[in-house]
Image 1 (tube, rainbow, N blue to C red):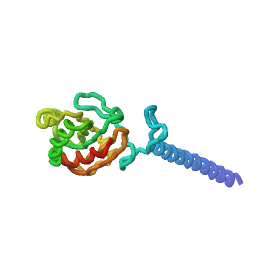
Image 2: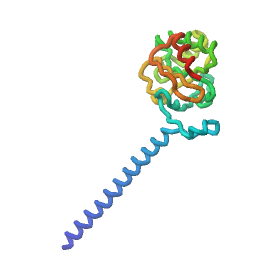
Image 3: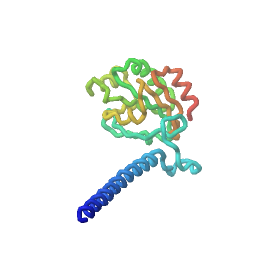
Image 4: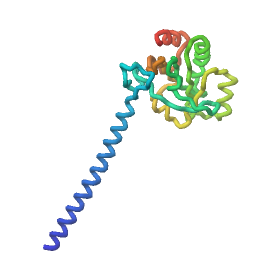
Length: 198
């Protein structure tokens, strides 16, 4: 009889431990889903349109571009959201990428002609060049006049799902994605797309 009670006690105890583990795992899944959901929306800022208190965040056209923070070559912190109110081109590139090199002169020309900010995100994690070589590429070889940001940990490249080099996002003054191009863009393509972006 004692053996049966002992066995039942062990079974009940194991059941309680199993239930506690299940609840713990389930609560973790729920909280991560909640975190994912919370990350899918941006709360309106005071200067946002009062009729649109939440804007869906994503990489598709018509969604708010995911915000990011990176350091530039001078070591200063740059945030995409700091450029709210201006049209922005976010270009992902690397020094080893021939099509990236191809489009840089066109970006420079557009930058000098248009009222647009360009954030050139160097995929630093893919570079075989030293930082000195990257600086020489930017300042001497191409004399790039816009901010060059360093994605050393592959966070922004991953978040923006970069699968082709270069990749360019065009974002309007309200922070909304209006165009995405995989591969190099020409001067004419850049101008055409910018004409449709306020």
